Length: 305
Image 1 (cartoon, rainbow, N blue to C red):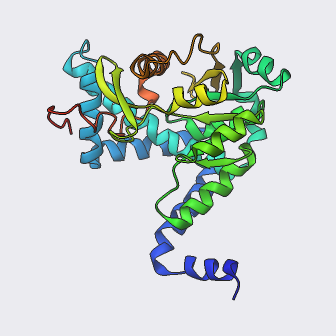
Image 2: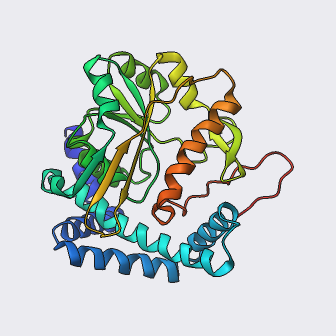
C-alpha cells in the first residue's frame, strides 16, 4: 500500500471525524451570502464569549494589562468585541481557505504597495512583519492578489487539519516553512523571496528576550532581528483589518524599519513590539487576545493566567 493510501485510510479513523466535520462546516460557511456569513461569525463569537471561560479569562487578563487607562466597563466591552471579531475571523478564515480569493478583490484597499514593489523591482528579499489579527488568513489571501510571499507557521496538532490547512494556504503562499526552520527562512530571503513572519506570540524563555508590549514585559522572540542580521534584508511591517462597514478590508505596508537590527536584542525586540502595538491600537478588538501573550514571566514574577 502506498503512503498516500495509508494516509487516506488513517484519516478515515473515527478520531478524525470531528476534524472532518469542522472542515465540512468551513466549506459550507465559506459559500454563505456575506451578511449571513457575518451573522454566523458573530453568533460563534458570542457563544464563545459566554461558554469558553478559560479563553475569556485569558482575554480579560490581557486587556486589563494592556489597557489600564480604560475603566472596568470599557475593558469588558472590549473583551466582548474581541470575541465577536474572532468569531467573524473564523468565517473569514473559511472564506480564505475554501474559496478562490479572486472574488474578494473588490473588497480590498491596499496602501503602501510602493514599499514592497520597490524591493521586488530590485530583486531583493524581505522579512514581512505580520501580526496575529483575527483577519490573518483572509488577509493573507487578499495579500496574494497583489504580492506573493512565503510564510512561517506552526504545524497543527491534528494531522488531518494540518494537511487541510497546508493545502488551503498553498494557493496564496509560495512556500510554507516551519517556524523552527531558520535556515530555510534565510535561504529563501537570500534568494529574493519575501517571508511573512509574525513574532507576536510567546515561544518561551529560551527563544526570547523580555521587552515591553503595551507597557508589560513580554517574552519576545529574538528571531526577527536575527533573520534581518543574517540576510541583510529589510523588515517591512504589514498590517490589515476589517473596516467598520464589515464588508471591506484595508491592507497596508509600512516603510521598512530603519537602522534595524541595532545589535542590541532588547532594543530590537522593543522596537518590533512597538510597531505591533501601534498596529493593534488602530482596531484593538481584532487582535488575538485569546492567546497567552504574557505566559512566560521574568524570573521571580508570579504567573498572570
